[in-house]
Length: 500
Image 1 (cartoon, helix red, strand yellow):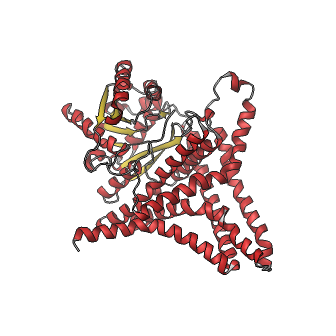
Image 2 (tube, rainbow, N blue to C red):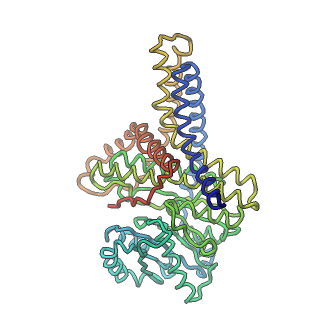
Image 3 (cartoon, rainbow, N blue to C red):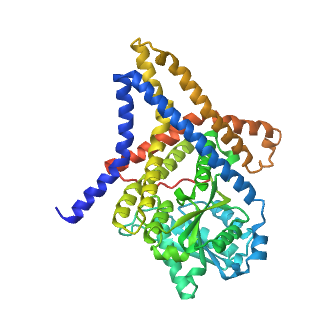
């Protein structure tokens, strides 16, 4: 057997581990509930207690990030930057906007937002990247955008990513990879200083907070080593929130609050979706990886490994807003939502990558390796198993015990204990429900909303009743789906989330 063959089988073994852990947990829960229901009840209660403690633990970090967010957005960062950091004028922002067939209205809204941000737009170079497969639709849109906004920015660069290049996976990562190399030609031809360029990568529907670029520049200028850091904003999904259905709203808000808890724990924070970083670091790692699905978080790991663990993700408590997967039709939106969550869950592909690369890099401190591998493993494991075990499999040992006529203090009191635990967990859910209302953008001033504002806000609060359903349908199941595919070697392609 050649070395390449041995390496292949070793890497495949690592790909199997996450899915194997998940399925082993399900099988164990079922088997122990049937063989010994009492032990099954003990296990379920212990699991629920662990998760209740974890919910309250995460609620603390959620509150910390929340207060930082409320404090941050009260500052006029453009005025503060102009007054205290005059060297901001030495820097340019490179803004990458990859597309995949989105309509003109979506692209135009993003450019209009950039043109109206509280920053000097003449310090912005905007790169709009299309796909060759959509060129008949993209080229007219790109031309129209360039004609409309070219005077607003320092430069608008249009790129078209060729289809079917060898070694590439069709998707956002390969488009960004091509965009990066095309922009590098322009940067080199015009002798820009790599260290004076700040990169931001957004989905094409991303609407930034008015102070985003001022705050980003401030964070970059005041960071001890901005060339060894990525900058992660908050992610809202508010562009179409008032037209969305309750299910997509809940899933979108759940993503926002998950990211908020991680923003308070930068030692475990990866880049996610929209992010910013230095051009120097991006060039050093050879741009985004072009043969994977989850390039947005992989870019952090590329830098972390390249710089031997001396790289971090810096929290930014200002939001960017994107579209939820709602596309008008309820069932089409549900399918769109599921595919988006499965694509995000495909981030499990980072586990074998981390273990493999960490093992080969002896310069990364062992403690950092352990922390990142543990966080990644625990994260994907909890994502796939916790909702199903708590909400469904937790009832199995009780059902088996009742069927067998087993009677004990534990079996008689277990339903009450589980109910108390679930009720305790609802306290954290109530806090999230309240926050989900506070962060909402103003309701559109349309006739159909005008006389029902209070009712609409009440419904946004009450919609969290279906949270247990969304945890399973758009949490556990797509995560199990992704992990099982990786375990079986059925690799996913990149599913583009439809935007409307």
